[in-house]
Image (cartoon, rainbow, N blue to C red; front, top):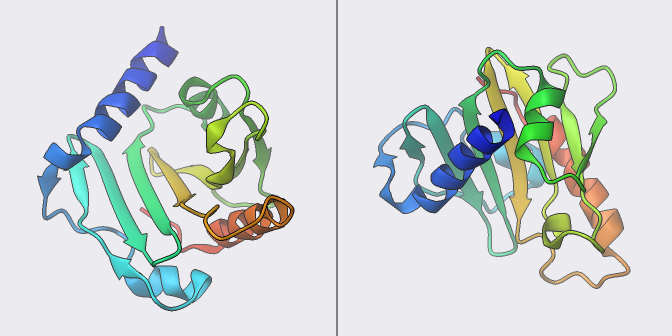
Length: 161
């Protein structure tokens, strides 16, 4: 039942992004992203729906999206399990102070396998960092290496909140 509830929240947040409140500051800025991913990013408008905050930073090649949701006192593995399809697995980031997990998706079973992501919980907030559009301009032979590089970079982005 919790899985259905949380999936419903995620679906509501993602489908109503355009109707969200504007003006909430993102806890990250362009410099935070460029420190890890390199120059050329611009901040897009931050959106807030209730307690869910979403920010995006974009270049011509890809975007970095940050979503911050209430964690409801849950542990990271339980939250990830409820929010992900059964085909997704999670790899712990070694010695990570926030217990970050790297999302692993099988390209044969999941269309989102080319969108690397990490998650963690801090101050009862579930934080998801994801690279969108990362598959453009890469051939399939180079994609696995690029995804690993992007996942590694996501673990280095300044932690919030």
